[in-house]
Image (cartoon, rainbow, N blue to C red; front, side):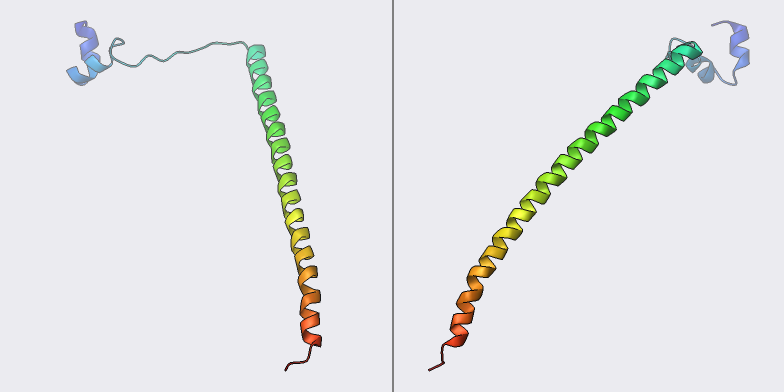
Length: 96
């Protein structure tokens, strides 16, 4: 490390950690505007595809749940119909 470089920093500690060997490296990519637009287009299309897939899965799960609930509702209605006549017959019988 040169003396001039050491003078630029307020302390030796700052000079050591500003050295490119010790500081984390950052990668910088330079792309043209057309490449950037293409990347954005691909990202947006991928996001849109994910949204559509999620919507389809959600709708399928919803329909399956509705079917289960409708089946259970039907079962309960049938059970109520079976119980109701039995209750009416008990009401008609005189209490001894």
